Every structure is written in C-alpha cells, then in structure tokens.
Length: 495
Image 1 (cartoon, rainbow, N blue to C red):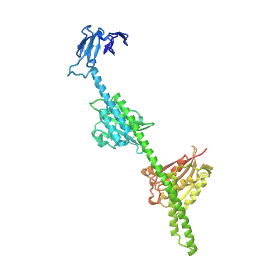
Image 2: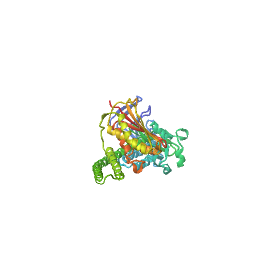
Image 3: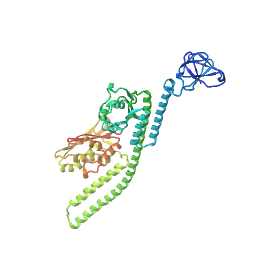
Image 4: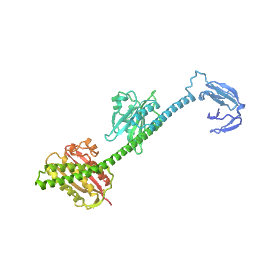
C-alpha cells in the first residue's frame, strides 16, 4: 500500500495495520497513516483522477495494476487496468526495464558458470560470445587476443552474420577502437564510429559488415592486458549505455580470469610432463654415459692390442669411432645438464685464461674450415667467481656454432671479453657467417631445434642459456641474415 505526499508527490510504501502512525516526508510534510479498517475503498482506472472524497488528484499511470493508494482523507484507491490496456508507460515501463536487467543478469550468471566448469578455451570462447551477444542485445561479439610476438591483435571467437570471415582476422597493435582500448587498458563506448578517428574500417572491408557502434572492454590479468571483448551494433538502433558497460566489464573480467586459470593449468601440466621426462632422461643418460665410458675404454684396449700384435694400423676407423663416441657423450652430457636443476659451483677463475683455452681447442677446427679465429680480451678483467666448467661449456658451444655458421673460406670468428658499467662482465662471440632470419631467432633456444641437420643435437644453445640463467645472467643475440651474428653473454659480478 502506498501513501503520496501532497506537497512534493514523493511516494512511500507502507504496511497495512490497524494502528495510526505518522511519517515525516523529506519535504517536512507530516503524513498520517490511518488504521486499515478506517479506509473506504473505491476503484480507480488509469489516468489522472481525483479522489472521490477529497478531490485530490493522483496520476495513476505511475502505479502498478492493483496498487492500493491510501489517501490522506481516509479513502483507499485501488488501481485496476483493463485487460487490453497499454501498460508500456510510467512505472510499467520501469517494470519492463527490470525484466531486461534480470535477463542480462541471468546471462552473466550463465557466463560465470561456463567459465568455472569448462577448461577448453576455444569452446569456452565460442559459448561466451554467444551468451554476451544475446545478453547485450547486439549484432555481434568478438574475443580479441594479443599476439605479442607478431605485434598483432587476433580475432579468436566471433558471432554475427559475417563471423566466419573475421575468425583469425588480424589488426596491428594499437589499431582501431579495440587497439586503443587494449593500449589504454580502459573500456570504450563509441556510438557513432563514423565520427571517431580511432575506428578502423579494415574488418568491415573484409567481412562486408557495417559497424555502427562499438563497446570495447580490455581483458586484464593482474598487470597484463591480454586482449579485449568487443561488442558491436546494439539492436533496435539503440546506443550502448552505462548499464551495458557495467555488464560487459563483469563478463570481460571473468573471461580474463578464465584465460589466466587455463594457462596456469596448462603450464602446470607441462611442467609435470617435463619433470617426468627429465627424470626419465636423467636415468637413461646416466646409463648411456657409463656404457660410453666402457666403449671408449674397450676401443683403447683394442687399439693397443692390435698395435702390439700387428704394428702400426690405419687410424681412420678408430678416429671415426672416436669422433662418434665423443658426439654421443656430448649429447648425453647436454641431456643431463638440461634435464637437471643445478646450482653453479663457483670458483675464483681467470676468465681470459678460460676463453683462451677454448680458442686453443677450437683452432684445429677453424683451420680445417679455413676460418680465422681471433680474440680481443680485456686485460683489466680480474679473477671473477663463476662456475668454470659451465662457462667453458657455454663459450665452447658458441664458438663451435660460430665456426659452423661460416660457410665461406676466410670468414672470421672473434671473441671479446669486456666490462660494463652495470656490474656485468661481457663475453661476445661474433662471426661473419650466414646469420639468422626472424623465424630462426624465435626458436634458437628451443630444445632440439637445429639448423645443422645430423651434425647438431639441438641442445647446445638450450644448455648454454640454462647455464647462464643459473649464474643470474642473460644471453642476447644480434643477427643479420647473410651477414653474421653476435652472441653476448652477460655475467653478473658476485659481491
């Protein structure tokens, strides 16, 4: 039951009871509520009518059907609408809006349920964009993710009449309204794209779709923005509003959490698989290493006995056995190093002497390939604390790779040691070899990636990077295809 202030027209919802009590309105008007049995009931149809007792006017279009209005004179008006009466006005319109909001909230609940129970991202994205399209009453919806390696934005899941043409469509980083939303990390509503300079027409040109208005919501996980949720063309020529923005942000935050959770799960599974593989590889590698040691010893004894009995023998066969045995030992050692977590065994080491010992060892290989092996070592570098075996292995890998990369006779490989202003010692290996393209540079440190064919194991650079990271350092590459490469190791000075 309602009572309406005669002064300011504010309405109050009051309980039916048989006690008299007062309400002080916000305008300071005092409203007296009579006992329910004191009211005389009269029926009123919609429209602006007068109370039949005191002639006070009421706008009954503001009330629901069957609403009871307690007039201050003691009359009780009951609003009743005919069956075919148009109720799409006043309070009834708000009821209609309330139903729309309820539908949207149900859509949000459905989205949350999908996110928490589904672990397949592709299926999850497809269902989310469908629910979001219906929930926000729009023509289409897209989930767009960042491809940082290629500096692009990729349309992963799309709904709408032209969705098939936009799946996997790419924009440049920062392009369009969505690019601006991702870069600024804020939600954007554009209700007239023609007047907005940020709008990109490329997607419309490809799909033959006509975009009128856009709602873009960034997908933010912790400190990173991984993409955006984009909703286009609200139906019935309506504009996107603040309510759409709030609901959209609720959905986008859930999507971001879902992506983060799935990626964490995948990373954990991958780590478990790698740990299991690492344990298996470690066990097998130890066995193979012991067998290779026995094989080397057997070859040496066999060679000695043959020489003792028959005199000098051709070395070619034994050299071939030796080379391939060494390659197997290197592979096994790389597998052991890569598969096990280890801490560097620090010792005070003369870095220049260590580098020079690598150069002496590799001079034979360089001469065979007719490659010039040079060095320019900084004499000011004092002894530093490093794991000498680990760093020796890293430099040996880099020099060997550099020589292999030099396909032309007379090319050079140069080693440098340098100090930097940031408490690092630098080791540089620069070659005039074939260089690398962008695709190779992206994969160069991946395990078992090799451009040497049967000549390489694909673990050398992976092991090198691992050892440098264990020292708390880093390794960087500068390379130009057909001109050469430079690998730089940054080793932090221990204090």
